[in-house]
Length: 108
Image 1 (cartoon, one colour):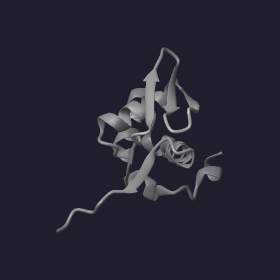
Image 2 (cartoon, rainbow, N blue to C red):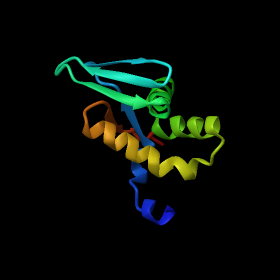
Image 3 (cartoon, rainbow, N blue to C red):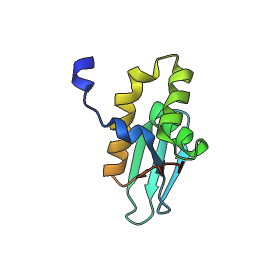
Image 4 (cartoon, one colour):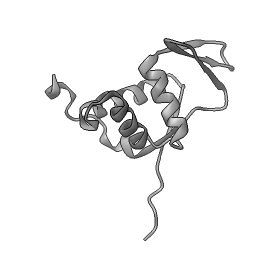
């Protein structure tokens, strides 16, 4: 299974994600619901996806930092969840639920 996950977009781990203004969300016991105010469409995330969304908000959208915290909370290695994390963020981006931007490189 690990071989299927090689070649994922590692660059996304160093990007920053944010929830666009036209999206609102609310977390319940077992899921997080997102509402697109422009289209009226609802989207659902399971508990893990909802927690990842929360962590993105608390880390200023830094995907790698949020993933490290999530891995720590679940007691797994970051490298084991990184491909799934990138796929999750890419899926949310494709659906317009988050905006992913390259993080500006600090000037030296």
